[in-house]
Length: 77
Image (tube, rainbow, N blue to C red; front, side, top):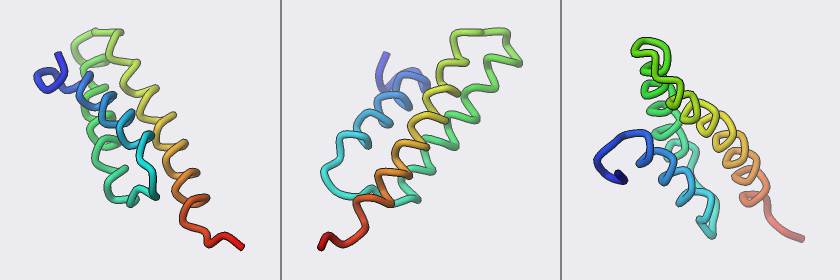
């Protein structure tokens, strides 16, 4: 379903960003986070509880990526 359905594509994008070697720009993190928010509305509006996983992934991945971004962008001594 990757590339066809938005939820698996967003979760895979989070995974690829988590595998990045260098710091990931914050604007690049914002794109799948915004889509996770938009895509998770289906869980509420269409009564699809499986889509709540996308919201959970969005919150967790955004927290991980932003904390790794701040750690990786600091100069080492």
